[in-house]
Length: 255
Image (cartoon, rainbow, N blue to C red; front, side, top):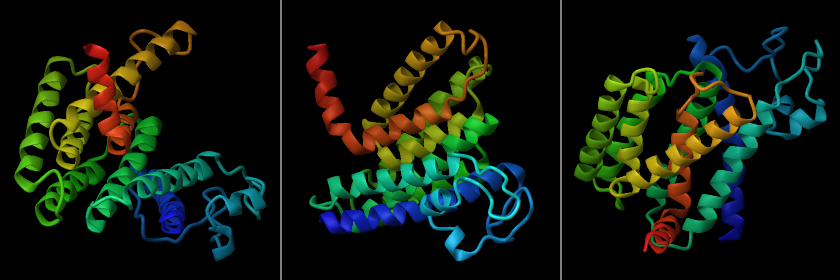
């Protein structure tokens, strides 16, 4: 199991490399297929040895081989983050009765959350071209892959959670965008009930604490816009990984 978890973690590194392409190109309206990977500064097409996740960044000392332009640290961070998430999730789920297809469905969900989080951090937007397919994949997977949630539960929870956030967005548009609404609907489709509430609560709590801390140290102003997507994504990932333990901790705390 450990060796297979490592292999899935290595797959996550490769997926993370692709997510970097998505994060950079999707907000700019560019194709994620063509042209191939290249330096955004000089246009130098990257060779296979320049595309090895994390390793190529270290070998090239974070610079383009030709023009010496700096490569953002975000690239290896996204690759490492995705690889670690894939490894941890596989390590925790491979010895359970979870259907393999359900596990890879949830891994794809986490990959989508990583991409959406970094796009939201860069642009304060959660593009429909990612949130809506993620919602669709969650619902289809719930119908055709054994496990929880089931198909109809996935639809009902997606509509319920998304509808609640749509009302919030209508009442308080300055603090909630429609991208967040679609992201929450996708989370509901993948997580089901009651896990969606745990994910939203956890993400909102972390976002509130982090926002208050940033205001306290003067990094943010009270009415300054803060991307909410990464906090929702973090809540969803924590729920996928440790949802049962978080529920147990919460009920022990409130009693």
